Image (cartoon, rainbow, N blue to C red; front, top):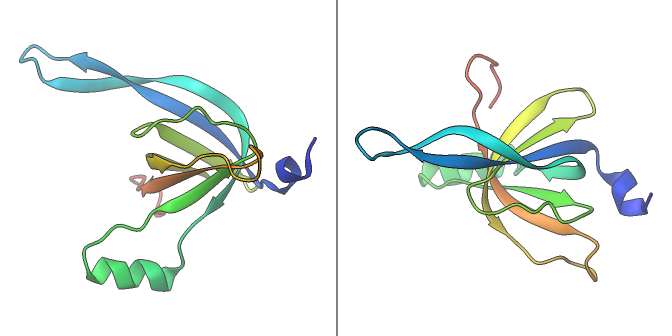
Length: 121
């Protein structure tokens, strides 16, 4: 196990939406296909001060998700990250970057998806 893998405090599942059509030919996303699972990752949320500042400007701030291996994620995929306390957060991938440091660390820009009824964002 590499040092980068041991530094990742969360485990992620990457899911891709299955695109379908309804009777009026509208686009639907009824289900998700698992692209990769059990990936060690580190989630870096923006600070509250940064979120507050950009909220005043009606601008979204993305979180950074770092992976020790290629997560195979694309824009609009979902990442479900479970931290060491067992809390799961869902993120919508907004962008990806090339591997840093000779292919040892991948990062994604992702927007946190609020979960109804949990009291958490």
